[in-house]
Length: 116
Image 1 (cartoon, rainbow, N blue to C red):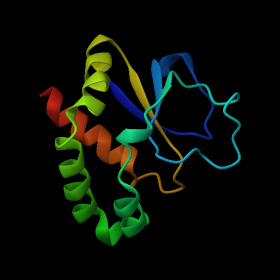
Image 2: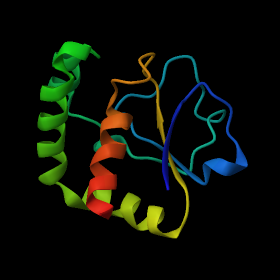
Image 3: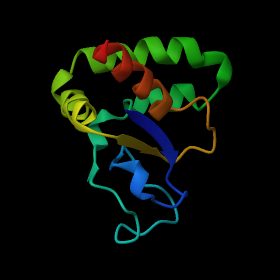
């Protein structure tokens, strides 16, 4: 099972393995305070794509296509998440204020499609 959760929400035992899936460290959080198993910095969208998208819902479909193309070109960065999801719950941690249009939601969709 793959879940998504905002970085500012408390960690729970039901989260399973927790992976920060952002290129940039979240503001206002010390590295020692964030309960994650790993920071997958390279799995986040490229800087150019992230800046272009800027969490604009009107760009969501194009963002997903472009982000999925980036992920397709680098399977070594997402395959470990797929393996972990086969063995238990994985929670993708994101920092955006936007709960529906962010890279973790897109990544979850991408990974779930790969699981099928």
